[in-house]
Image (cartoon, rainbow, N blue to C red; front, side, top):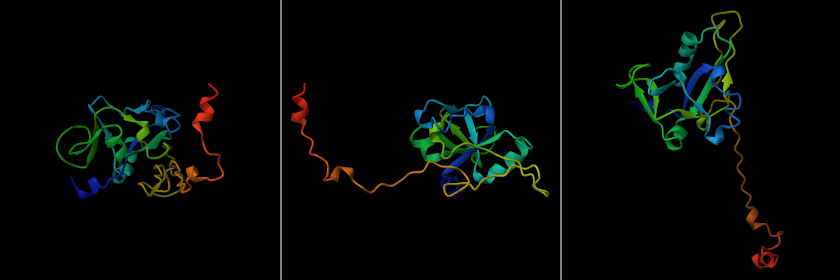
Length: 174
């Protein structure tokens, strides 16, 4: 396994929009809905950022219903207990190589890094005509809409304007 493989923080999947529920992002924290991948193998194939353009061009060329899913590697390993292996062939298990396979079951949408995104086709004149336009990728990629996390440094438990809680007062009501 190369250093680049170890440093992958986000992995991707391309699929038809019909394969992903419309509320996958909204309901992701329920751990109920899952991405099943395609095929009947005992693993799900994911892609690195470097593999996306080629996969979109070969498997989804000209399709207007192609969706990009991005998954956090740490969440898949730590929260969903999935095994991620880099293997020699895209559609076969074994060996060591550049193809990412996820073992251990389906991938919960709770592992999504960003909202699923329908890829649009480039309509400009030139060599990219009809190719999918990929957003900036990775943990720093601004093209994928992520959940905003706000840091709140205030400690509400130290608010002196609040009346002191007295359990005895509430026990008298019973």
